[in-house]
Image 1 (spheres, rainbow, N blue to C red):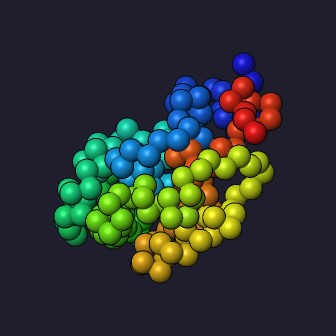
Image 2 (cartoon, rainbow, N blue to C red):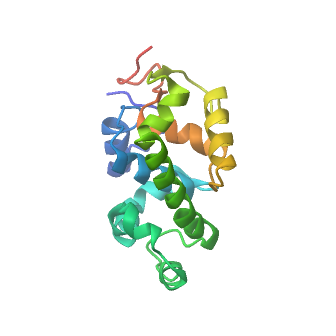
Image 3 (cartoon, rainbow, N blue to C red):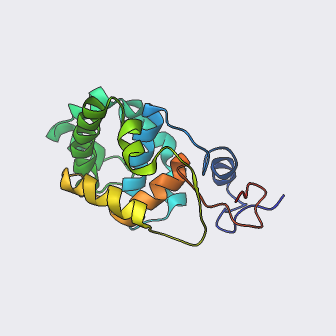
Length: 179
């Protein structure tokens, strides 16, 4: 079975992610939040690195419970910085708390984060290959930055849109390819 070239066939977590999640529409609010946080932590790193630590992130960030993460304080930040099982970047950890508050504000303003995204996507799946940014990721990134989110540049948002299935970029040789 052929998969996208980026999928490390020696890593079962990567294969499972490629086969069962990446590029498949999933607009569950909890999933949208989890993936946004994980994509933020990817900045400057590989997705495989983040994916390998996903279970630990889930555990250490209270199963990505928005209500709990919003309340994280400096003591919790210091605790997370000492945890070798996750990516220990103080700026990203603080940005997670900040972005969680903004994510919650967007949910309240639009009824859901998915509704917020639909303002940009028209609730359609985009099939495209070979890109790391697009006019769509540029627009969403600029809007999130205007709202004071951090680590949400166009490349991170493009990757996020691929992860949640707004953009499907499975390669032509991949068994999941669609055009």
